[in-house]
Image 1 (cartoon, rainbow, N blue to C red):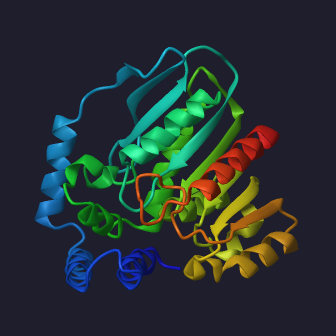
Image 2 (cartoon, rainbow, N blue to C red; image 1 turned 90 degrees about the horizontal axis):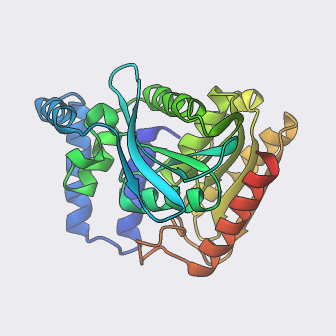
Length: 294
């Protein structure tokens, strides 16, 4: 599934489910299509330059007595990759996890997930895949952030994720051969893509993410636990294909499908999608999987 098609379908699905009005759907589609027609418009370039100029240097924020969180930059090919990081205040040779955001960018929900991992003993790095467009903070409207993501090539996004893995591996608290990835929605799809391109990833938990190109499955080194919502027909249509491909190439693959849960059910800041029981259970399975393989 092409990235632009996936993001466009997300807009249509929100309208079909009644989360946005027909008028809002048409507005978002118009903005999205115009942005694709002019991916590097003067507006995007200006937003990028402005955000890069105003971005602060690395800061450390004490979240509570047991963990610390800070903002960092990883060296990227086109621009620095901005990231939110969190880890236990004490400890060495810890497992690390890349946390990949949904299609709205690096929002507080994802930063909170990074802190949750830190409280469980992981070093977490949540990269901002809008870094090439100035970062998520450059977009006041979440719909504009989604549109901007659609103007970045899939290969470029994977490059930025690989930079984030390198940032995580270089942390003195991390044991570099104990790194995994977790992603949500768009980020679930990018987690799949990442593990086909970076063998440093030893475990992966993609939440309701579209499949990677099936011809890339042989490249996967990570052990995969795929999480799905039972009502997510669009993404679930690809389950049989990815299960067959991972079986054919002898990859460790397990899946959990939660009946009654929709796409994005883990996001506790989205009352239209959040499914508390499924979210809690999926989180526990995620921790168990990462601890098993990292």
